[in-house]
Length: 376
Ligand code: HEM
Image (cartoon, rainbow, N blue to C red; front, side, top):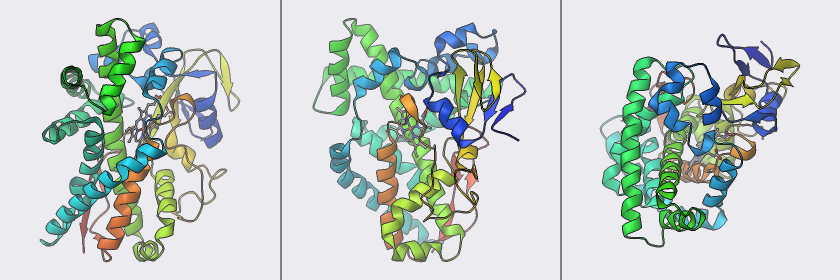
C-alpha cells in the first residue's frame, strides 16, 4: 500500500524500512510527549489517567529532559554488567528448564508460562533487588497496564490500565522508599545517589526515580517473554530446524536476530512531526502522528529479500529495538536471556516439539504470547 499510508484518525502508518528508520532517527520527529498530548483535542484517550502517566516515562520524553534522564541511567548493560549477570541468568534458566522437564513428564507443558514469562522478571528482579515474592504481582500489573500503550484502546481497557497504573506507582514508590532507608551497592541505590546529586528537590528526585524504575521494569518483561516464545516457535515449526541448530550452536545468535526480525515483540511505535515535513514523498503537517510499523519494516523486501521466509543465515536487518535517541536500553540483556535459554534448551531437549502454534493476546502494539504448548 506504500511506505506511508493514511490512518482513519488523521495519522499515518509508516511501513517501509527506510521511512521507519528515518522517523526513528531523524530530527523532524519527536516522541508524543506531554506537551503534544495537551495540544490534542480533548478526548478520553489523552485524558485517561493511564495514558497521562505513561506520557511522562522515558520513552515519551524529548530532549533535553530525555537526554538528562537517559544519561542518568548510564549504559545499563555494558559488557562487564552482562558478564556479571551471565551466571545468574544461567542459573535461572537451569531452574526453569528443570521445572519444564518436570511438567513434560506429565506429557506436555506450556513453554510460555513456565519459561518465557518467568525468566525476564527473575533476571530484572534480581538485578534491581526486587523480592521474588513480588514477581507474580508485578507480572499481572504489567499485563494490565500495557493496554494504555495500544493504538486504539477501548474505554474498559483504559480502565483496567488505570487501576494497574495506580498499583505500579504504589509498588515502585515504596521500593524506592525502602531502598533509600537501606541503601547498598546495587543498581537502584546507584540511581538514587545520582538523582540526589542532580535534583536538589528530594520529592522531584523520587518522582523521577519512580518513573525510571517502573518503566525499565515493565519495558523488560513482556517484550523479552515474547521473544523467548517466538524464537522457540520459529525453530520448532519447521521440521529439521531444531536439530539443525542443535548441531550448529554457533548460529544461535543469528537465529535470535532472525526471530527478532521475523516477529518483533513490539509492532508499533508512535512519533509526531516536529515541524511541517515530508516523508517518502507524503507531506505531513506539524504535530501529526505517524505509526512506525516495526514488523512491516522488517518484512520490507527492499531491505530483506524473501522477507516472509525464516532464514537463520540471512544476516538481515531489523528495527525491532527501535533506533536513534530512544534505542532500546535493554537490547543486550534481552539477547543474553534468549541466548542462554536457547543454548540450554537445545542441549537438554533434543526432541522438543510444539503441539500447536502460539496463542497471542488480542493486541496490536505489544504482541504478547499467552501460550506455547510443547512436548518431547
Ligand atoms: C526483546 C526484548 C525487547 C524489545 C523487542 C524491546 C523493544 C524496544 C523498543 C522498540 C523501544 C523503543 C525504541 C524507540 O523508540 O526507538 C524500546 C525502548 C526501551 N526499552 Fe526495550 N525492548 C526489549 C527489552 C528490553 C529490556 C530487557 C529492557 C530493560 C531491562 C528494556 C528497556 C527499554 C527502555 C528503558 C526503553 C526506553 C528508551 C528510551 O526511550 O530512551 N527493553 N525497547
